[in-house]
Length: 270
Image (cartoon, rainbow, N blue to C red; front, side, top):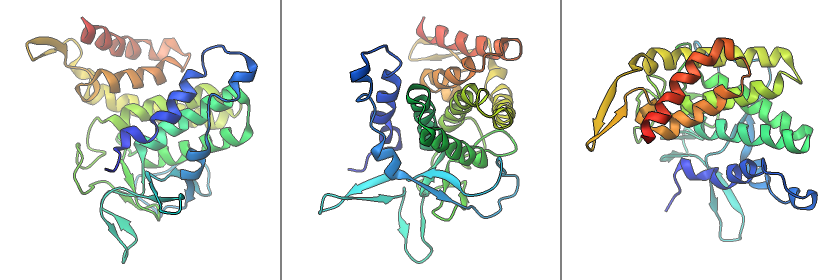
């Protein structure tokens, strides 16, 4: 059975997240192993897509969605959905914003721990791809084909459809990755950090327009009163967005937004 996209990066992210705990130096070097993520990474030069731009020039860093185990013990990188060899496309795509965002977080945190330039470079490439996937409305296209062509409407269909037509898990994770990236690059590359902050503001505007406009309203689900301003009605997606917002270290501009999202988390647990 093919794993879902939500499980692909689980092990790698758990290792990176766990590394925030203080441990002996000898153990710290064994907490994370990026070999599989490194194997999944590649670069692409996407064709022009109206409204989609990114920082700088050159190939974007992307991440294959799956890796299929082969009989000889090796792995083959594959995309999601039915593959069409004639067009070299997948029903969904080769690379997706969900995994790119979470991988960017992993590499940012790996840089913070070990100061490996390769991890910072990987994070930069992935963040450049993630912002290319972001549409002018602040939402994010989920899928990209092997040649970099965007695929807003995948088969099988995933909601919202098109994938940049409303709030989504990948929008929440984009906020997370942009916040993590901004917090790191503001100390190493202020120009790139400024770009990430602009794209973070664009994503936040989408959340305010589509989600936080319901702040103070509630839904009754299974007899429980739950906040209607959770991203995709989920405390999980909302929590990931809050992680990114909390790392911007600029409370004057972001505090009201963070407080509304935090309120949704508290309300969902009451």
